Length: 216
Image 1: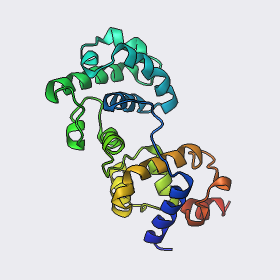
Image 2 (image 1 turned 30 degrees about the vertical axis):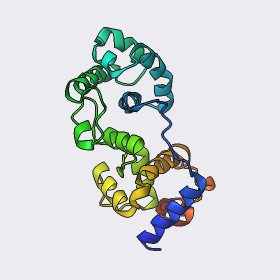
Image 3 (image 1 turned 90 degrees about the vertical axis):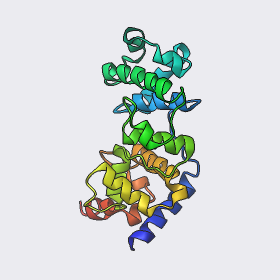
């Protein structure tokens, strides 16, 4: 099976098994999603979803968040990983959006990465989820699953390299959805420790299953 056939097999599988693939972060608008994604760095979506309601109740708009003080915001996110930095990032992000973008969340990766707390991964999430742009956010799940299955080469050792290979081989109209397919597969099946190969429908094309599991 060549790479093109492998990608088609994986895409067909996910289209059947996870026809509706969405972020598990709870949000109502681009502002709320951006806050949630910034908070989700090295933190679970479940924890973020428990935390954001209080933030959005107190700071219903990005303009209100821009006026927040560290001491007022910090108590609302202290249960999140790296609360000091994320408190500063959220206030800085909101202030820059209000000042530079008239209070509207920008929708290009180049503009988003100018914001405090927003790297390429976060920018890719925002643009792909909100605007369905063909951008691939590579987190630990996407990186692990792509490497294990063999969707990307061994030479792809950085998140950017993995991102570029996935975008090159996945149909453009499916890239925003494929991001969620790979995350959900990594979160619930192809987990970091003791992957659940016995319930996985991709073992036929998976390098990890062939080269590691079957040989042990």
